[in-house]
Image (tube, rainbow, N blue to C red; front, side):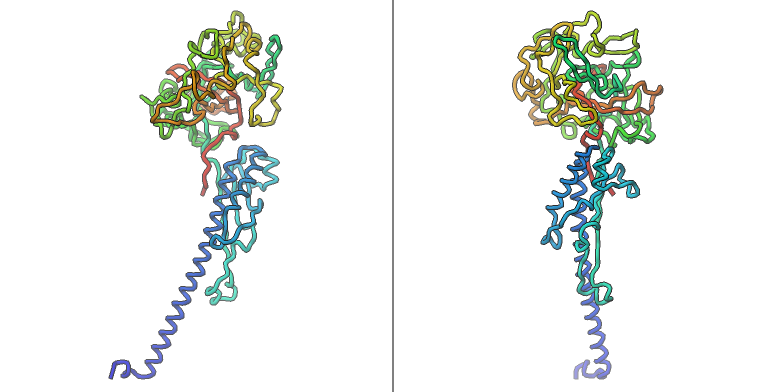
Length: 487
């Protein structure tokens, strides 16, 4: 007789009941796992939707109503590519799920689409919540969990994501605005008389030594920007030490989202003697510097436009940029391109190379309060140089249809070394903060950024000079930067 047959019948029944209960329990646990798995999958699907649309929207934000409108459109486009229910069903997107803020903080002020378009300034962060969408997207019908309670026939989940700018594409260098006026008309006497656009005192197409300017004194003024402390915060002198600045000079980025919207921290003066090798990485020069071609590639055109050999100007130049002069009467350190009329004795050759990257713009095409058109402002032709840069006639000889920098072959073009090709277009354009001056005395102080100037490096920098051609001013929010998902 086997062992089981010797057990009492009552014990065999108890064992069967225990086994049955265990099986039911196991099935219930497996069923709950399946239900929870569906819930987890739905959560992941909604999170993918939130992440994708938040990133798409945040990349378009630039402080303008047009940027908000573009963000709304890009978010909708991104949502169209996301499906739920294991990729089987589309999601009907609504802009109600998207909001915007000047801060990533959950407790901050978040604006809906209409309010954001009405007041877009400073809005660099996008938040997406799945809750305002169809409630069915977050609901999962249960099979086994409902056995525990009639209230568990379905369970719901949701997701949210915040994305925004972490960096800004600006060099940690600041100079004084030559004027605090965003735009003014310079009536060059000609003939013919030409109304030229002047932005914060700078003229497009004219070269400046950024280390030799000061609209409020006779000694040069320039500054290093704390690359780690955002506007409105208290920075540190240690953040402008050479070892800290170097990687930011290499990359042309700052680890802050904005330059405007509050006072920034700057140190007087910019340490060009130690930082010029980093700036020159843009010319495919890496010896003795802290940059590498991987993180700081050269420009696609590294041709140096030295004033002694300018192919598009038939008259010799006297220097690399507009000639500096100290105006004792006004107490300004200016160039011959600044006052009107130019100082007595000024020659056309004193303007240095002209229009290597940007042409002089017509004031008539400027609209106060409006962003510069995508195609740029209307410009003058090289035939107008005699009127723009009188006295004297800086003759153009075979000036190209576009600008010399745009060349891809010929005397105005030079490719970087084969190992570092193709390079990045417009790496030689430095985004430099234009400060409201005078800046308070002291080594490390607060300063206000009026705008960001675009300056094209015409030649590699030296330990004492940084020659660059002015190419226009723009608000800091118009600059690019790394956009990422935030906690």
